[in-house]
Every structure is written in C-alpha cells, then in structure tokens.
Length: 299
Image (cartoon, rainbow, N blue to C red):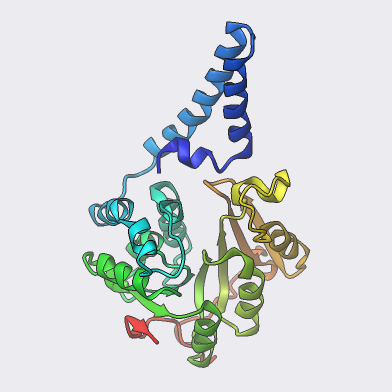
C-alpha cells in the first residue's frame, strides 16, 4: 500500500481529503485551498519520512511483501480458493514489521505466538530477530493462505523458525494449551470481533509466559473506536475490547499510534522495578517454551 492508502485509516485524513474536494467545488480563496493541500501533503510526508528513516526490509521480507502485493487475490476469491476476501491492507508493511522485529530483540524473546498469519510478513519479521532455536507459532484459518504463506516463508532462512497451525484460532489455542506451551510474546492479528475471547483464553490456558507481552494489532481500527463513524461498517468491537483491557486491573497497557494502532499489554506485576518473574531454563513448571518443532501445517 502507498502512504495515501495507509493514511485512509485515519479519519482526520479522510475528512481533510473530503474538505479538499469541497474546496475545489466551492468559491473559496486560493489561500485556503493551498492550506488544505499543504496539511494533506504534510501528513503524507510524515508517514513517508517515518518509512524512510526506518531500516529497510531484508531481501527475503521484501520478496514476501512484493509477492503479496502482486498476488491475484480477487481472482482467488472469485474462484472460491479463499474463504474470505483478502486485501493487501492486511499486510503489516515494513514500518510495523521493523517495530515488531525491534520489540523481539529488545525483549530477549524466543517464543512467539501469532494469531492471524496472512502471507507471513509479521511472522517473518518476528522470526528474523529470534535467537537460534527460537520459534514463531502462527495460526491461520484459511488453507489456501496458509499454503501460500508456507511457500513464501520457506524461501528464507528465518522462515524455518515459523510453524503454521491451520484451523480456527480458538481451536489452536486449546491445542497449544494441551501441549503445555507458553510464549514470551503473543501477537493478536486475527478477526477483531474475537479479540476479547482470545484475550481471556490466553490467560485461562496459561499461554503467556512470565514477563510475557500481548500485542494487539489494529487497535485504532480506522479510527472507529474514537470517531464513532463506524467507517468499516462491520462492528468489530475494537473499542469495546480496548475498554475491557483498560478495566482489567491486572494488566498495564499502552496504545501506540503506529499505522492502525498497536496495543501493548503486560501484567502489572511485570512492570514493577524488582521484576524478575520470568522462569529460567531450569524451571520446574512443566511448561514447554515453544522451541519444539511442530508440523508445518497442523490439522
């Protein structure tokens, strides 16, 4: 997506573009028209500048991004190959990918769970920062997309650190629980209407490791939680989920305005200065840390 397409996630930008169109039709001063044009260009320039000042994608990640953008998604959907209408807007993009990669490196993370794989952009970025033996377990509901992602990930060395679980995310969470798995970072990027369910199951199943972090994508969801415009018209309940997390007295959260919003959640106990809750490799909890190989696609 271009910077203009990303900007359309911002309701203020959308209204400015609308105002720009109105100004062209109405008899307003050239000075006012120029000022509106300047504001829009500044917003676009800011995003372009952030992109330009961010480390570029690796060759493997850029290859995956390019292949995703050029894939005939509409044709695949019309032919019934995919169960939902994919969009390149679902692609994380390099800015967010490099943030995820940095977060893994900063947090000394080795075990990642991702709900919502799509073609593997975020999964590969996460995997690129993992240490030897690290693992990303990524859950995807659509067989066609899971197979495509697997083929793209297979072309990179870091992609070998990604295991794909095929099926509904709730079922995958239960399977991981049954295997006594736990993860340092859990990235929620699946169907937004189920985020509340995923959030509750993560804690109920004990999937979040000590000192672990939950990261929720699209937490601003085209501005709907604060604009009340229902721009997407699908009632994903992102605002309700954000409020639910805010009311959870056991966690500390911060909402970052990166692209379409990233909500970072940690246990309050892990935010204390004393810290040190993470179990060591010699712990006796009986939990597995996600380094064991899983089948590439699990039924």
